Image 1 (cartoon, rainbow, N blue to C red):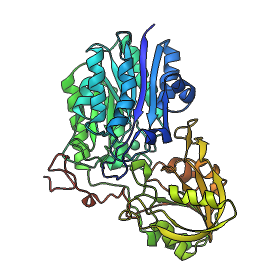
Image 2 (image 1 turned 60 degrees about the vertical axis):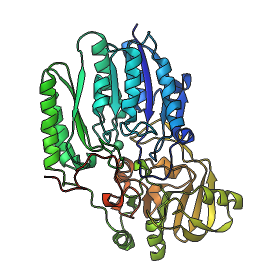
Image 3 (image 1 turned 135 degrees about the vertical axis):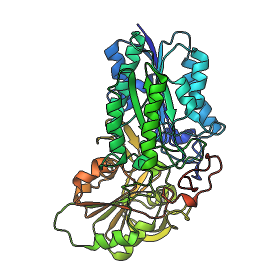
Image 4 (image 1 turned 120 degrees about the vertical axis):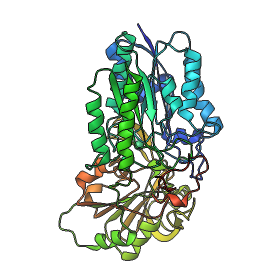
Length: 492
Ligand SMILES: [Zn+2]
């Protein structure tokens, strides 16, 4: 019976964030070790859920030392990196026949700019050249030569919102099973261009550069010897040498043909690098649309595009809340504003108490506005615990940390201790708010929210509040990124 090492270590590192990512940051999302991995992840629509089901299907003996993820934030500390990788390396003994790793692909740790490449290098050093390694990646991975040198199989999600995590893991497992059976001997190549942005940021909810690239990738995968054509939009807010879009091709034949395919798709990416379907409106425009009378009975969904904790945003930007409060819009639910101090103040005051608080804007007011002082009533206090039940991470247990709902005029503001991208209706339901019954929903997300909230909305708008996940790259100083690079430099 083949013995497989399954592990999940994932973080999208925004190196411009002031918040270091330490081990407790993983604990706030999830950090399961050993037997607890299967207990927590079996039956979920996650990569680890997919790996575990595949192991049953193919009759593999498994060892699963770790499944850990943190909400995107700043540099992963050296201590956290050692604690995350230690169990994986320790499990790499002489009895492992294959490795299935669920990674993000845009993780940056202290001392390891290419964190995934560092982990793969160490795994390969312990296991030797012949043990096959398959990695699954977020489509916002910054894929490096080092990663593709050590991983035999490289395969990223094909959806944004990422609703195919389980299927991606199953695909990786199928290719691993074929490798272990001696049917294929996969290798991977990767290529890029001098651009930080491309493939329309990876969006698959509208026809555009990404959907066309994926169609072409599907067609290439029908060629003999081409196993996976993996298209990555990249993660732009990582100041590392190789940030940006890339294409990796996993093949079982001609490396030259695999590279030619990757180059052809990156030519397409380069030619269309200016094309984007993201057109976030201003706070003023969003407020003016929110003022319009509604007869649909459905919510207007306003997504704070630039304060997306899923891209490292602080989740505490106040500019949109400020605009809506000033306009006196009724029936607004905001979920969540990250503010551990405000939550504590609400808990101290108790349900029903009237409090005056400065909320949000505390981590770096330059991005998204200063704290906003409000008088409100504490309407709900909770632990923030919930289980995802939407298209992403279905079945995975999580927590927004201690939560409080503050009623301010016509607005309910969910205050949360943990930073969290709003992608699931359970964010609202877990604090007693039915999102379908509100006039306006404010969510912290750029794109993932669409999977759950677009179907219930009368209209969806993304809003530029000037926060940390701004598409205005001139606000950041890149020091390690390869130069020249578009759009920071003129590149022919
Ligand atoms: Zn992503």
